[in-house]
Length: 311
Image 1 (spheres, rainbow, N blue to C red):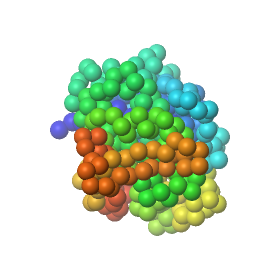
Image 2 (image 1 turned 120 degrees about the vertical axis):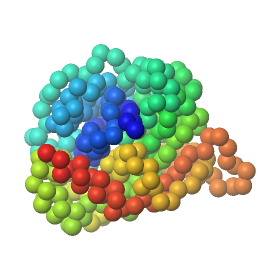
Image 3 (image 1 turned 60 degrees about the vertical axis):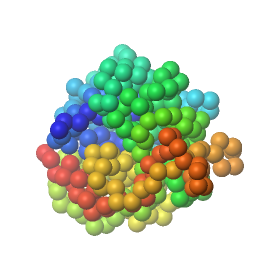
Image 4 (image 1 turned 90 degrees about the horizontal axis):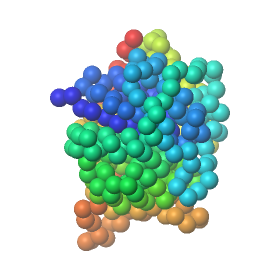
């Protein structure tokens, strides 16, 4: 059965790989890409999305520019992770095409309401666009079949602070709105990326052996990420948070361990962006979020390699 996806992204290195995986999936139609500021400024994120889709042969997919800063805070980018251009500063990216005239928030609302229950939403960046759409339509996420979010770090091991993951830290107020809204939501946190989505020497060699433009693309755009991981997070390679979240969206059976639990976001400065999971008896309810704790690492990576093998 053909599935229809909408992807909200702050397009940088790993977002681009996630888009590549979505385009390569034979049973998926990518209906739209909405873009938010986060990893890079909005103009760069839009350009990166347009370039990536064109590179993958999906230049027809509409790209909608969204909000250029968090709901109430100043913009903080992750150029130290992804490079100034968001794509490894390798000179690969060029301007290709133009974004659609419809604003991303308008597109998210329209796409949900014109086909309730038929589309799935995948979020790869700060949740600013989605939160703004929810402020207009509180039932928005109930009209998407489900929402898979690369957001937060439920085990409280962070990548931007000691306890917070970048997407939630960048706009915690937006994340709070989304996590408290009704609708089927699946949270794939940085814990999954840190523990089960690292591209170490063996995976790097596997990509090199494919010798395809897509495999080279994945390696080139993640050059700066690899340097950051060696310098800051200490991983044996570079991790791919957005691609593993996309893998869960594409193949839900990849999840081998998860739980439904209320999730809240710390908004105070000391613990800004930290996720708070409430395991007290009776604390749950219709607003519970499915928190992913483990995925089939070998299977999701095979999905990535298959997408990269395509010429």
